[in-house]
Length: 286
Ligand code: NAD
Image 1 (cartoon, protein in one colour):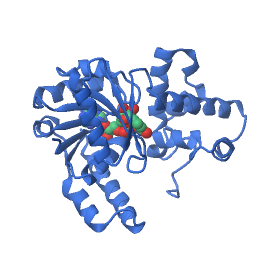
Image 2 (cartoon, helix red, strand yellow):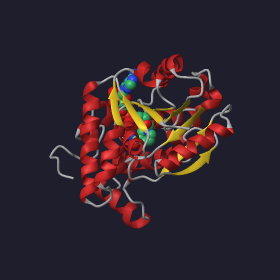
Image 3 (cartoon, protein in one colour):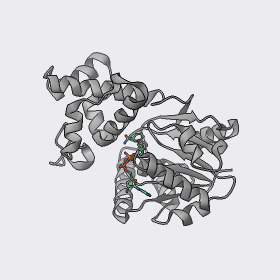
Image 4 (cartoon, protein in one colour):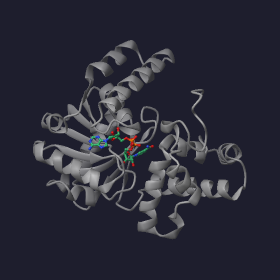
């Protein structure tokens, strides 16, 4: 029985996962190395919940449940000692994820299930950093987590059926639909999204159309809810570039990152979180 969830990494995704976890009734500890990120995560969570109440999506009682269940910490070892279920959401760097898995492994009880919100990295590889690969799976959420319905569950070679079932139950309790995916780089969603996003950058670089018109064409002509360039800004262009580099290495040339995307990331234009990406968010108007 899962009662207590630890989310590691309080960035774009971790804070959203902690939101749906606490709202679902799990006692949730959000862990980060940065106090500033944790404070920022709590502030954003408050804003999101308050907007939810105003829009009639969330009751005051549910909001109380959410904040009653949500806790923050900078001490990973202490947090995982109490936990039943770990969701890792630190940046997409294998060495970093490896060190988180190993530290959590050293302090977590035997039955605890480990998951990662990685967009691309192999669950077999991540599971091998623990001593319990059968209790490891990828649990891939989407941004913004409180709105997006899907969780992709990706099995590693050793992932047990029982683990997949528990991950599915946890995701469903968080209000999500699930799909089960076999291990392959980029799963289903990251692979398609990276390709479309990269192509949009190539088109922008080639001067095919303005960013606004590329996004408008894809939304109104192909019925995507968001344009690929505005989605890139939301996801984070740094994250998008990391994904493309990994997919390029694993799946070949069609995933080679567009030079303009590399240039934006080098310049620090990484999207909404930095105030500027393809679009400018520095005025604060959205
Ligand atoms: P982010 O950069 O917004 O946040 C990462 C957080 O991890 C930061 O708050 C950072 O301080 C923290 N962190 C770094 N090292 C840490 C450590 N040792 N211990 C604890 N916390 C640490 O990243 P993100 O966009 O939220 O992505 C997190 C993961 O989710 C990545 O694997 C990414 O591929 C995946 N993902 C991202 C998206 C998206 O739209 N951004 C969507 C699906 C999956």
